[in-house]
Image 1 (tube, rainbow, N blue to C red):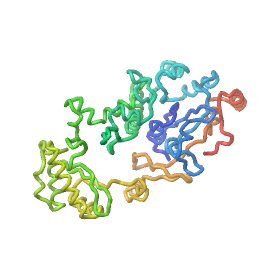
Image 2: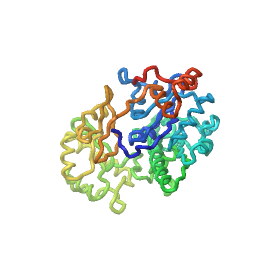
Image 3: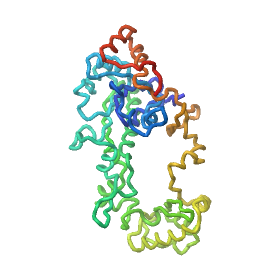
Image 4: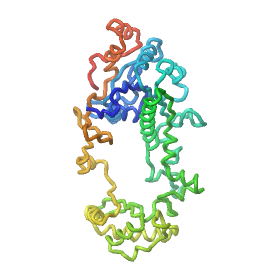
Length: 407
C-alpha cells in the first residue's frame, strides 16, 4: 500500500517534466490524477535513459502511484472535463511559466470559482514575479542563478565548474518545499475551511539553503560561510582524502573535541592545537598556508590505511567521517538494504520515499501509467457515460490508451 497519510485527498497534477511535488503526494496516499496533453503526453516519457521496455527511468520514478488522463486543454470540451475534475479535487499543482494557465482559464482565480476551498500550488523556477520570472530554465540554470554552482578559473582563465556543484539541488528542494506547503495548507483548510494559492520557486528554495548566500547577506562575504576557507574550497578538517586502496573518504571533525578524537585515531596528538578556532568549531584556517600544510599532512597519513580500516577506527572513536560513495556500488550497500530503500515492481527498481510509518509498509499500488491509461476510469468517476466518453474521444478533447496497459 502507499503510505496512507493523504488518503482521501485528490490532486490534479498539471505538471510536466520533473515534478517531485506530486510524486511525494502520490506516495503519501493522495489520489494523484496526472493530466497529459495529446499526442504523446508528458515530455518526460521520452527522456533517456530507458529501463528496458518499461520506459524512461525519470518518468517511472516520478509517476508511480498516479493515474493518467489524456486531455487537450486547448479545446472547450477538454477544459470542461478538467473543470469537472477540479470540482472533485482538493489540490491543483502546476509548473508552467507564469500566466500560462491564465491564457487557458486554468489559473487559481478561475478554478477557485469552481472549488472555493481549493489549494492551488504553482511550482516554478523563479516564482510568479520579479525580473527572472519569465526566464525559461532547467534545474541547472536555477542552481547557477541561486549561487549553488561554484566555479574556478584555470590557467587560461576559462571558467570551470568545481566539484562542489549540486546540480538540480534548487528545483528538488523547491519540489519538496511545495509538497510541505501543500500539506500545511490542507491542515489549515481543515481548521478554517479556506483554500489558498501557493507560489513556490526553486530559486527561493536554493537561496534559503545556500550558506554562502546567507554569509554574503549577513557578513558581507560568501567566503565567510560555513565550509569556505581562504584555500578556495573546504578547509583541511572538512575535506576529502584518498586512502591506501585509492578510495575517497570525507572527514568533518570541525568541533574541537571531535578534532581531538581524530588526532588520537591518526596518532598525531600534536595536531590538536593546529589551526585557528572560533570558540569550539573550525571550518577552515584563516591562514591559507597553514591550512594547506595541514591538509598535506592529513593526506600523507590517510594514505597509510584502507577505507575500511579508517572507517572502523573512526566509527569506534566517534569521528565524523564517511566514504564518498560510488553510485554504482550503492545498490548493494548494506545500509541501503538495512533501510529497505529499494522497492521492486515488475522489472523496475524504485527508491522508496523517506517516510516511515510503524503501521504501514510502502508499496507501489499503481505502476507508472501509460499515457491516458486511466482516462475512462476518471471520466466514469465524473459521471460521463460510455457514449459521452466516446464523443469526447472522437472530438479529440480527451485521449485514452487502447488497453490501459503500462509502458
